[in-house]
Length: 63
Image 1 (tube, rainbow, N blue to C red):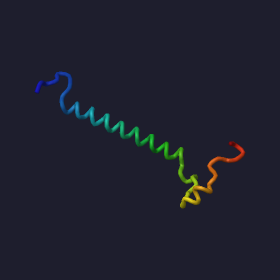
Image 2: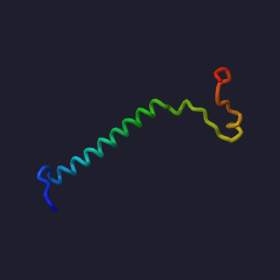
Image 3: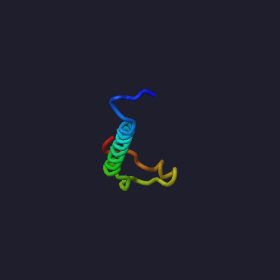
Image 4: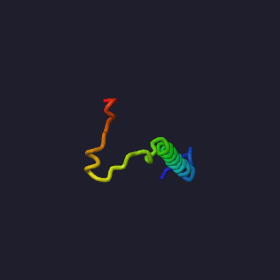
């Protein structure tokens, strides 16, 4: 295997792991803020198909 004169193998693995860590950290931060922005506690729960048929999807005065 030819040696790369610009970078040693441990440095290459350090850079690869740094990129993977930063992508995971960005994804976690994005997920945190999306969960905060779209809080599911305000959603209306539907238990049965009958409730789904009776539920109003749009307010009548808007559509």
